[in-house]
Length: 265
Image (cartoon, rainbow, N blue to C red; front, side):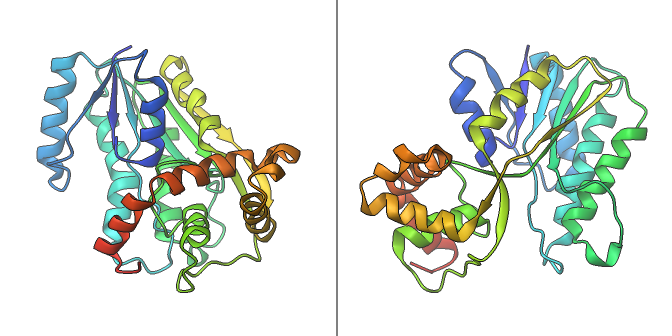
């Protein structure tokens, strides 16, 4: 396989590359021209032909699920328009694709209750079902993924880890909720397996475990106070502690990033 990774800076991509790059040679495409759709497609077409790519994994995604996002056009571009442009660009070539979506995106019952994010993912799902192409396409629909390298502190688990580490009161976090979560390492073998997909459209659903966030908060804090002895008794929280260790070991970089963009630390 000659696999092209688009969006190599995403946290899912970084974990995927860390795990498999020793045994698999990946190719990467510079997103310098990404804001210029025509130029981007021209450059990537040339690159794919030059490197004889036969599978593209698109890790680019916009997770802003607020009801009134500031850049709604970017959400549609990243989650809907880009995947369709890629498929259309290579529809006459033997190039297969892997895309990502959310488990929750199945149907639109009431468009007024859905964010631009949800709509963009729904449009992609519907389009893939009817798009005329000879390419093999895999769509991985996941519950919320957590793990190392995730620096989007608008997401639940990164915000939770940050709040535990720096004890800042202005980091808003709703603890009284339940959330289905899946550890990133459980996703990675599934992503790799899609490079061998033989189906025209293969929709893969990955469901996580249901966690009470307030209990998760207490267990992580208790584990820290007891030097992680709690983890030995409760394996469900082991992956959270491993994730916490990554944030702890990279706190200097996290502080630098947040100072630059949010001025919070």
